[in-house]
Length: 181
Image (tube, rainbow, N blue to C red; front, side, top):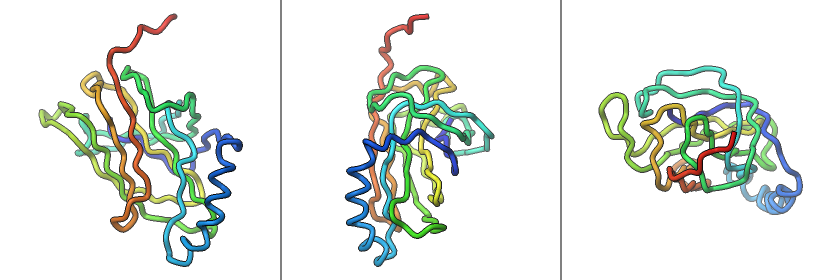
């Protein structure tokens, strides 16, 4: 599966973590808006649960499809990810101080260790475009197929008109303890 992306989800937002970001964003918002530049923050990251609403064909993804999700809730704030079927991880982007109704076209690339796809090709990265509007957006990965359970650094690089917005790296490992039932 490729990146699970959804617009309009409602992730859990912890205000205590966001207050320093809000203060910094308020100071930066004036300059960002004047320059026509998105003021975007990462408001949550780590493992999450979500409701899958659709799958769409995606020739870039190792298994030829991409899940669209909604209603995500972050479970654990971590960058250390155990690659196991059913695990979802990623991060949430949110606008800060931008005019209501403003949508930004953001590009992002996922770079990861080699994954052998169902098409027989070795995949090392996928690239996508997302529209970030008033609602937060989720950029993530869901482990549904054993061929994607690959250890190493998985990095999302998000850009606007070629300039870096954020880069998020997750350290994925496969030597996971057996979960207790």
